[in-house]
Length: 397
Image (tube, rainbow, N blue to C red; front, side, top):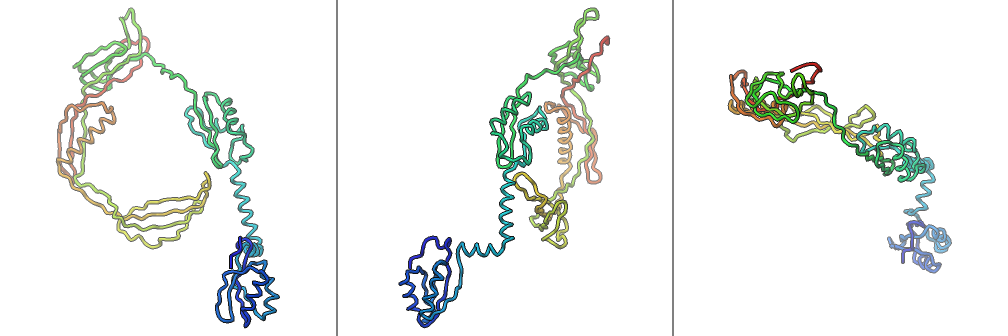
C-alpha cells in the first residue's frame, strides 16, 4: 500500500498481528479505509505491518471481530519522542535553559579590539568607546549603528582622521587611522665629529662643518675629524657638524673553535602523554609508563577550549616525548680556522655596520689543545669611525 505523507511527524507504529483469521482482518482494514503499509507475512498466522498512530485505536473493533491479537514492536515519530521527553522533564528543561543561555551569551559584547593605533594609547580609545556604550558585557541590541558610533568616536578622539566600528559575532573591532602629521626634525645641538678609535683615514665627507683631517692621516681616539666651529677666534660660528668619515681600524680577536661538534637528531620515534587541563592543574589520562628512550626531548602543545574570543579554563595538553640521538661531527684544523675567522668578521659587521669592509687578516698565533683550535687574529677593517661630541660654549678646539 502507499505510504502516507509526513509519517514521522504524525507518528506510526510497527505491529505484529497473530491469529487464525489474519486475512479477514486485512480485508476488514482495507474496507474501513485504514491506511497500512509495509505489510509483510511472517507465518501463516502472523503478519507485520505499519499503521498511523491515529488509526491504531481504530483496529480494536476489527481485532475483536476477527479474533486476532496485536503486538506493538516499534514506535516511531515525533509524538513518541515528545512523550519520552515529557517523562524527562528536568532533562528537557536543561536543554531549553541551555539554548536560552546560549542565546543570551551571543547577544552580548564579549571583546573590544583596537587596531591601527600607534601614537594614541589603546586605553584612551577604549575609554572613549566605553562612553559610547562599547564595552564587554554590553547588550548588542543597545548599541547604536556602526556609522553613528564611528562619527561619535571620531569627534571625541583628537589626532584621528577616520574611525571604523565593525561587529563580528560578539566582538567589536575599532579600527583607527591616525592623522598624518609633518615629521619634525630633531633639534640638534652644536657638535664636533670625533674619532671613536685609532685609525687611518680612508675617506672623509663633510656635509656641514669644517674638516680638520685629510685622507691617509693617522688619527687618535677622540681627535676631531669635522669641526663644528667655523671661522677664527675673533669671528666664529658654532654649527652641527655632519658628515661621514671612514678609516682603517685594527681589531684583535682571540678565537677558540672546537674540532668536534655535537648535533641533535630526531629519530622519528615518540611517545605521547595526554592531559586534561583544569585551570592550573593537569590530570594525565593516557601515556603512562617510564620514558623508553635513553635520550629524549619533550615538546608540549596546549589546546585550550575557547568560545568566541573567551579562553575557558579547560583544555587539552599533549606532551610529545621525542627520541633524539647525538651525532658528533669532526672538522679538520683548516675548517676550524675558517669558522673562527668567519665568526670574528660577523661580530665586526654586527658591531660597526654591514658597510664595513675587511681589508686584510693575519693569524698572529695558533695552537691546538684539548680538542680545540685557539687563534689570535688581527683584522684590518675599513669602517665608519666618526662619533658625536657636543660643543661646550667657550671651549676651543
